[in-house]
Amino acid sequence: MELNIRKLEALDYEDILLKWWHDRGWSAPSKDFLPDNGTGGMIVYEKTIPVCAGFIYMTNSNIAWVNWIISDKNYKDKGIRNDAITMLLNSLVNIAIGSNRTYVFAGNNNPSLIKRFIDFGFAKGNNDTTELILKI
Image (tube, rainbow, N blue to C red):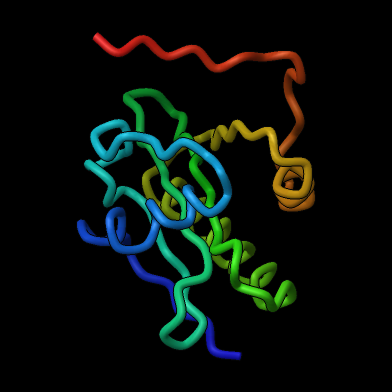
């Protein structure tokens, strides 16, 4: 197994991520809703096959916000996918550390991904929250 990670590039949104969100039946966030217009994150490959990606928002406080973790639903090797997600979380947290952030915040409703965050060391906050967005 050969996993590689790199910064997201402008075409990754259209060429890879939109399909992943569609395949999972999820609404894709608008590109301009994502950090750095869709390039503010990382993507993990197994050799030349994209496996998972995620984003990190840097704020003007001591918080970095990790969100929009997504993987290829059709990628069948769960062991490699788990290793790829671990590599992705490590990378995103290290970006926050390298930016002198004190906290990394993540919101998610996927039980297996929530478990991954907790196993990684995240503390669980509120369960009964609703995301609300106003486009102006």
